[in-house]
Length: 270
Image (cartoon, rainbow, N blue to C red; front, top):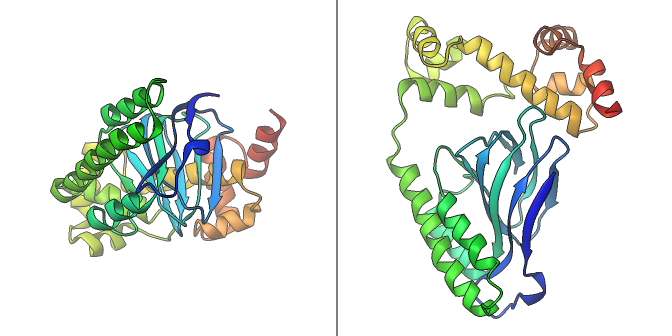
């Protein structure tokens, strides 16, 4: 893994309405993991490529290519790349009264991911400003503040105006319930579509059945828990709401090719 990071910790001034803490671009690997608890920081992170997991304030989301995820002040969060396709991402970390205002005024509470919203140009401009050695820190903050407002407005408009197709609604319903016990009948109740319509539409759009997709995503999340936590196999099985540990182990092996215990052991020996 390698990163380009511009740090301004030593220049931060509590008298300013906004402080830029860091900006950078990260080329992650399978070992990439960040965890924070209750820090006074905000960030925007745009996924250029790859996939991974963000656990924040009891939510779990799955940022992938062209998604934006947001970290908010005082949140408990952990985020990490997938092993098979690690993130490449560009990001900025900041804090202050202006940051607090922008999030409260323009973005829905408890929203931590915006799907398919390209903000690369704004973050790349912040990165370019960060690397310009001739700028004073207050000038940098002024220019970044304008760009952060543009990012917030872009996210706000995207959230308000994006109309999901029926297939996207089904996929979103499955994604947000990935840790729950859910079957096709539950999707029917939530979305008001018939079972046959859901299966046919999902297969036509994504090339697989809702059940196969849901199980695959559960196994992918199980892999991340095995690699990045100390939860036992039984605890992971319960957390992901498999019927029992035996069914979890057999489903995992059918998808990955080895048992959960073997997968964790092999990964740690690399």
